[in-house]
Length: 351
Length: 273
Image 1 (tube, helix red, strand yellow):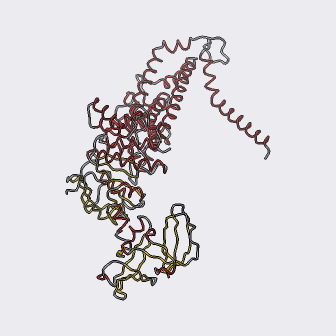
Image 2 (cartoon, each protein chain N blue to C red):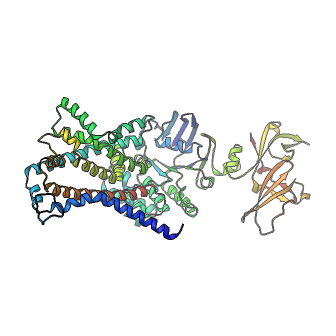
Image 3 (cartoon, each protein chain N blue to C red):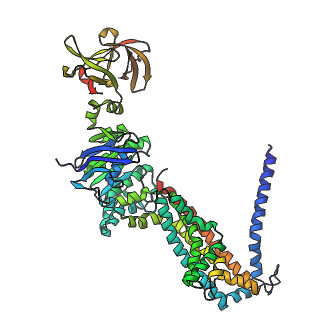
């Protein structure tokens, strides 16, 4: 399948800072791809290069097979939504939404019809004559979305569109954006630092760190099979135990730096190499000391309502365990327990 | 510190403020009754009431020509200095050039240089260019003075302007030029109008440069008044002054209203609650 958007070996420096390095990414038509990373990871820089406001120092950016490096931003046919809404304060909602159509010299009657259709799509049909300052944050962002979609752009770019909204509104807008995006079937590239936002909305999440891609994968793969310790820690929480593979009594075992011997599923071919074992806190079962798992001691208990987090000490290693709250009183600090998990949940990664 | 002490302090302060305001406004206020005087002398209080000095002003060809010249020069000066001011302020606001501060200092220099120095310099230069005594020369001379004001006023409004709005406009398909006229200019419009009025007012009551650059044909109202005071001190001056005071007050009132409106628009622009 031909990629719709393609970054190939894109680099961008600001002075001595490598904002984006060797950035290569392909996005299929209609896909929802999120660039996820903390501030300074290069996610917004990548987006601005695609929008045409920054020029890469090297590499190619193609849209639908066409190199767009030399195409002016107003000719790229890209819808843009910012965290700050950036509505034109001197125009009404209809004026804002009609703006891209006026710039394209669309006939007046058609503009009116398309404004109406776009506002209906974001459920703001009755707000056409209001000014942005008369709308709430969530409504303003929906106007921004309508304005970015009304001219049927090739791509929709969103830079932290929910960042300025409060928590409840954010949840609602997530569903709204996803619904509108799916209905329009538009290729979308979304930038956020919120991993939950990224995971719940995207077809593919691209984890970025220091201007590089750490891993690009569908949300489930990212969570279940993180490529490295950075991704494992960035997406959800994880116990990352360092150690190496050994063969113990004819069985493949992972011996941690702290001296625990842990069962894994991987083949013995990687025996002896330095590795790390990733195990998600919620996949660990806590049993009585006699149960025959890894012996551990409870160091602290964090009662969180839905979940209870235990910080365990097994030898020299710290292991976090998340347990669903089922109404029984939590275990006490200092208790001796044993930890066990399904070997399929223990993932070996390179360090 | 007791409460009554505090209150006495407040009263002393407000008394001081009123004193300063009276000091500033009394000379102006004195002109108004004198302009309605029936006497040919500048006397306070006026012996009787009449409109004769307003008539003398309105039906005198010299005064009317000078007024027309002032309006003409003021309007042209306002337009030129605002066009230049918008360009300069916009360029400076968008620029990331490291010597930008030097350009800024150059632009604002006429504010600090005494206008007599500018007048003498311009006079010498214009005598080579045969611009002395012409409208063109006078308009250029006044634009030199008013241009930095317009830059200051428009720079202030561009500082509140969110340049991401331009980015959005471009991404929505607007050319940079269309972006400027459809987005940037309407948003900074209150400042542009304020700058226009300021430049007009500045040119309208400017006397030093006009003294050097204006010829018999291009005499402006303030210069005519200056000459009038020197040769024949009559209440016509008071009448004209009263008209000018009223005009200035209206303009300042309008700019104040526009400034406030500009604030509202700019605050709405960021979209932050």
